[in-house]
View 1 (cartoon, rainbow, N blue to C red):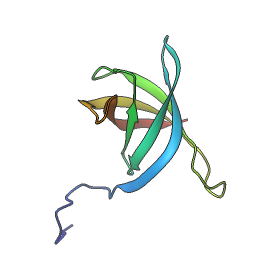
View 2: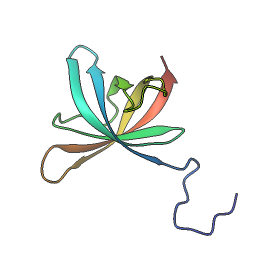
View 3: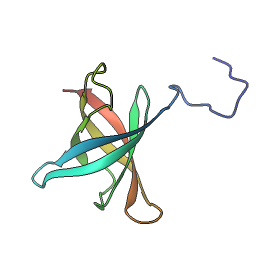
Length: 97
């Protein structure tokens, strides 16, 4: 597949700005803000410092009720400091729940 623009990912990212929760296995439920979603991954911002390779269960709740919530098991592949605080997290989707 050839693309004439800068985005070279296999799946185009859809921008979001909606609430979500994630569960750390053995660590409780936490809140975050989903930023983008693709066919294979998700980006979000949270105040929790996550570790690379950590497996989470996520639930993304869209702003409009016409779209079903996304529930998936994911693996953390990117952790970066976010401005003005918190962490910018990138995960890959392992399986849908």
